[in-house]
Length: 294
Image 1 (tube, rainbow, N blue to C red):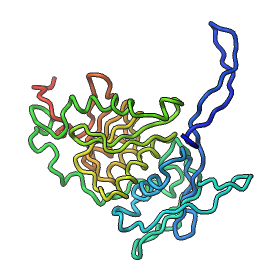
Image 2: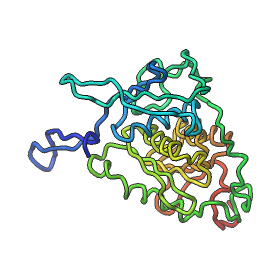
Image 3: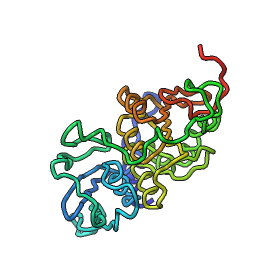
Image 4: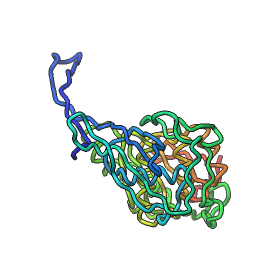
């Protein structure tokens, strides 16, 4: 898997066995510098691989582009290690004429860690961005009641509950390292459209969104974004900006994620495990004949 993983000798300690040396496989984490018009715009810590998707998705998440015609090219540029070898850790994005460059005052002021998708933004006001794809305008759950009961919805409950396992089955880097997050884009019928892994959960989502942008698939109507961890504010924002109507997480959402999802019309589900799931916002998209809620 090339630079996706790295081997290292470790000391394994156990209460049930003597200490021993063994080889461990780790997920690689390296910085990626994103440049616009020759200027460093942001640095993010990521797992190398699908870097062009990552940059494209990042630009969508920043509200800079929303159609493939706005992004003319992506290329690796200067970046060498101590031995003079190309590191492929700098990507230059060329925007189409007429696409506004971001205000330099909003450039990321610090390195974005693999744990944070919005660190370093110049102000809180810059965090909540306006999407070009309004989720309230789709026909989601038209056949369902507003409380999510007795309706057909758009994605069947049994399909929604299958997505975490289907995501896990395709996580090749996680299988070897146990150290990466995953984001998978599924159709409402349960077809896996794209899966990406990364040490940063927000990077995995950006890689999925960037794939969709480069394939001309935005907005991502009639899809569910399934993530392997929790659902944070930045993941809801990224889904919103890509026109994804539903986000499902294996773990919990944050309070701010729920507030944003409610505001923008996105269906947010959490604790999707086995035979149950918590639906926090806009349940009408999930088809289930649950009768009367208690």
